[in-house]
Length: 518
Figure 1 (cartoon, rainbow, N blue to C red):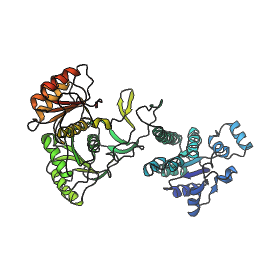
Figure 2: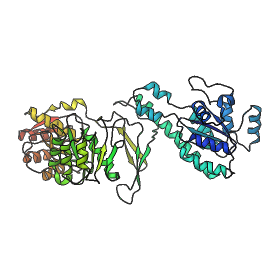
Figure 3: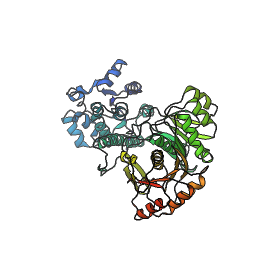
Figure 4: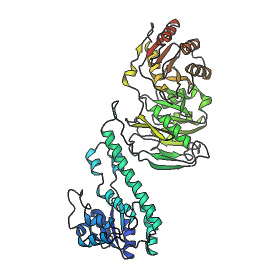
């Protein structure tokens, strides 16, 4: 392939960044500029001569701009192979002029979706049709046409044009990036329309899953220093989250920081009352509710202060000065919260390495999919959530839980959803007393929770994310002083487990739904 000299360029961009500079550089190199609508006006106002697309096609823009470049005189000029005599003969016969370069960026569908999530008409109008079509035509014919979709490429391409022409290697690279651009654009639209079709319990997963995650942060390394890593953002996620949070101070975020921040934020967003969670390796070392952020923080830290060292703290309320003093009493990696009072920022400012993440409002993710990568594929499932019916569990023992126990059981059950399975959560009131996480047997998770307790567990309740396969876990809990248990039920030995609870005068309730977290 030879170098391409640009004699005619079509420029049509929504984002006008640096477009005047590109057009001026093209004109100085002797290229004719063809343009549309707003882009043509911007270039004309800058004093640049511009030929309207309507003059090229012989048709005006119509249907509110939906139809303007979908014409053979545009796409023929892009797709004609320059050394194909038949192509050139047909082009001459139909008055088609060659177009050597296109500079296009698309309607901001993703940004409109984020800024106006409930304005369906506005979102639909941001589905660009002519732009992707021209990008694809130019990219297919990269041997003869230069395609630009990123303003960062304007300068380097102009340098090559001034030097005599755009190289084959550059044209291939630009075409590859252009196809990636349109593929990502279409994937965002596909994802939005799929969600509009519904993601309830009966929702069908698509036959082909198109994902368009955008790199938002290059990380120093992954879980370990020898692993390269980056953070990619889901353009369809509308709820405030760790990925979109603003960093107010502190060191650069790490791969593991982001995992723990996500876990902390997900947990506290499950509660309407002021909540605090202390996360270590994505598991809660402690979590609690309180009358305010400070009280919740004190209770959460007291559950396992040793494990809290070097952890992540999450709040679902603005961090007050009092709460900040609790945070400052311990070495922590990061804090995530909706906001920070000015006094809190002053208190935490001396801890220059502490990462402070501000999310804005509190809102749990609304539906959508959860992805888990495996070698050779991707596992996709609906996001797990607490069903409203789970707040009214069914008593299966002779003794029913008392009102105080019910409140504590519901709290522990909510926390258990955020603990790696096998998960056991001991709670006193609305604060964790101990957590047993990630064990291969449920009875060992119970034993580990008991061993980690800062004090006596007498009078506590227990939540188990899945059923007890044997009575041994219940017996261990009873010896520790647990008075009530919440679990899904569903074991073939449920009656044996219930009988064990009755023997110990414990209350036991079934939720009917498990919450494994692998």
